[in-house]
Image 1: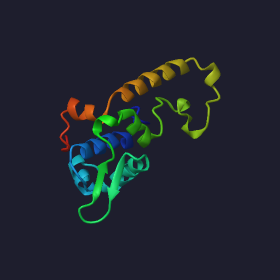
Image 2: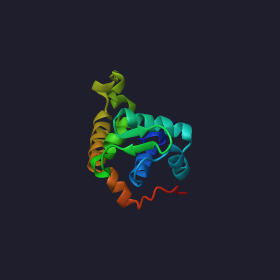
Image 3: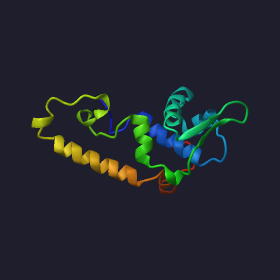
Image 4: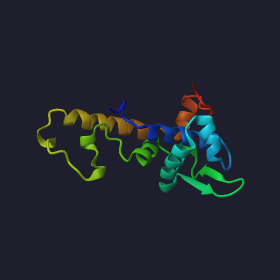
Length: 145
């Protein structure tokens, strides 16, 4: 059973992007992994999603790594989470990314509640930027306990 709206992938994407935002120049995944306490292998998967979305760029070789393609205030948390999660739908029946519609949708007594929650969640996350988490949570890029 899932424990919340967002998977580890989404939460780690925000942490990794926040870490990159607090460091100038090219940042190695090894350094992000160490600071954030995220396994290197899993971090590679998360960063690949950010790279595919065009949110980070990479440079191979010595002195290379990853960096943001835009300023932190130009990324919404919603877009980062969508790139990592695929959807911000609070329940599977509203996640249309798989092309399936729940057969109970028309007669479901709870669908309007979930739909409204999804709209509120998306609106909130789209109103917050990566810069906001750096300020709001005193994000230092160091691993928290």
